[in-house]
Structures are given as structure tokens and as C-alpha cells.
Image (cartoon, rainbow, N blue to C red; front, side, top):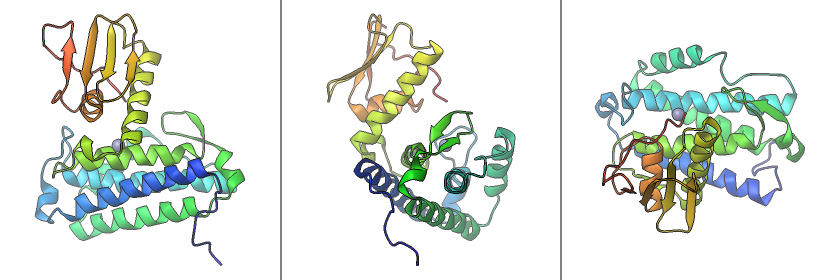
Length: 245
Ligand code: ZN
């Protein structure tokens, strides 16, 4: 007998699971609005068609499901054997027929959702490893997936914007990105101030301050354009954000 609801009893995790599944549903909606011919069109990511995005999101669900299987069984199953294999898989996926590509997305999303649903409370604490080599609790996979589906729904370039992404997701994303800059030391002289909430990130003594509403600031921080953001201390020029990933 398979459970029909999530086994975890942690309310915080349940809320995160809801957010990831909503993001997946949002991505599905944007994907389904595209005709088969439109799948061949460009995405917002340089060098990637919409097919690449769909393939990437499908294989990402499979990769994250492997981490959940690892957490459940204790048998190490990496996300991907290597970055090269991951990239080859995406290139291959992008050549699939539209129906196969859509099935890849649908089936992988359902499979991951079931893996999450059936993971018992204690196993969510088990350590797994991301493709970047980070050791994280299995619970982190929910955020890893959330981030992918919400942001890449925008990358499909058929109407979704960062304003469609829930504020808690945007805030966590901005925290992650500015944290990564800080770790690498690429945020020197740069501060980010969100004008529609009381959030600031980055170098407190910065000469350059990027300002704007949360969706615009996150869009800029992810390297997806300067629309809606301003910059103090740069004579009006908004600098490109430091590299995120
Ligand atoms: Zn991605």
C-alpha cells in the first residue's frame, strides 16, 4: 500500500514541497502553452532552445530522484556521473520528438514527486551530494528542484516573468546567489537593496548599490537582464551581476 500523501510530518518541509510542486505545475503550464513547432524556438539562455530547457528540467528531476533513492537506501547514486555526461544528456534530450520530450518532463516530474512523497521523516536528514560536490541533507533537494522549475519557466520565454515567482522563492534565491558571490569574493564593492522589502545583501561598505523591486533584482542577479533595476554610484550604468553558477 502506497501512501497518498507525503510521509514527512515536518511542516517546513511540507511547505517547501508544496512550493516545488507548484513550480513544477507552473513550468508544465508554460511548456504546454507552447506548440510543438515553438519548442524549436530560442530560450532566454544563450545557445539553448526551449527543447534544451525542457530536456534539462526532465533530466534534473531524474537526477534529484536518484538522490532521494540514495537517501532512502543508503546506496550512493550520484546526480550525474559528471558535468560532461549531464551536458551530453541535455543535448541528446533536445533532439527527442516533441511527444517524447513532453513525456520525459511529465514522467520524471511525477516520479520525483512520488520519491519525495514516500521518503520517511528520518531519511530526509541523510546526506547526499550535489553535482557541485556539496554534501547536503536530502531535504535540500526540494529547494534545488524549486529553483530550477521556477527560474527555467521564465527561460522558456513565453510569458513567464520573475514577478510570477513567489516572494519566498525569490528571497531565498537572492540569498543563495549573494552568498555564492560572497564565498568567491566577487561581491566586493557591490551591495543589493530590495526596494519593496527590507532586504539588503552584499558588501555593507559598497560604492555600488543595485536597487529595485525583488523580482527585478533577482532577475538581474541571475544574469537575466537589467530591466527594472537601478544603480547608485555608477553614473546610471547598471553593471552585469557577478557570475552565479
Ligand atoms: Zn538549470
